[in-house]
Image (cartoon, rainbow, N blue to C red; front, side, top):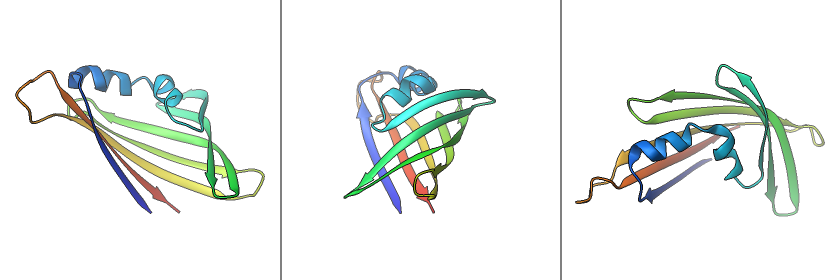
Length: 118
């Protein structure tokens, strides 16, 4: 399944990019996500709760963040296990920012693309 979402943020690209580099702050903005450990080398431990209809799974695992500051892009690769049901899952999130095509140069657009893999 591929989920794509794009949104505009009325802040300078550098400010938005700086925020996205603060993984604990970003994790607080994600419903169902909990950051449990900073394992170093851009690797983080955490939990993600997913509810689909009557089913709920809590995946525990790791994510590796690879950033490119010059291009304002990052890739987050994560894998996890639902200990209760034994399900395994993984996802790749690609995020990036670019200046929005508008007269005011201090505006920015942040782009997040989410790809989930089985």
